[in-house]
Image (cartoon, rainbow, N blue to C red; front, side, top):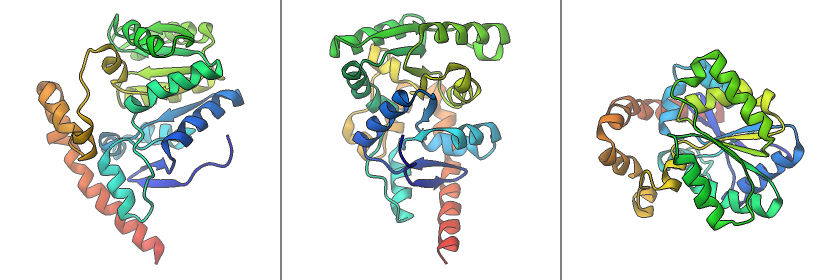
Length: 257
């Protein structure tokens, strides 16, 4: 990849200023470079979690690309005078990336989600891009990353498939920490954190309508779908984002003089 795009601070982490098409180009360039790397997609919850998670901050610091996911982060970029050209969520990125991978002859490996979900997601991607080569699909048991033997086995299976791109759907911050822990062992593969994208592709979950997403209300749609799982995240934990955003703005103005 050429010179690193501009970084925009988001609390203790960052995102790069890139257009959607340029993000696709950058991921393909990483895969072609043959040195591996990681791609993260920060949202409000990532920003909040990073406040008290040094390992997550380190995973972001070492990421090859950080692609902004979430309208509140785009709004913060505008207030900083460093507007992001596009919102680039993992859910929006995967299908176009699979199409590009098919054209470029780059294979994909799908890691994560419940048993059967990854296979259905792979089928959906291949239906859209018939020449796509799926190197493998793996749905490890919950908590595998905390078990040394299980984790080693997962890494060995992914490595044996020799994929160019690994879509890691473990949820934050697990996927970012897992990618950071294994990015060197799995090189030259490029590891991409995609959250719930496999669930969306497989029809396991429904994405928010585009209008709600553009209004910054995707969180409300997801909360209505999974209130028990997401209520604390959206209604309690993520309220800390407002204070983090204000601090980021103050620090930016102080540096600007």
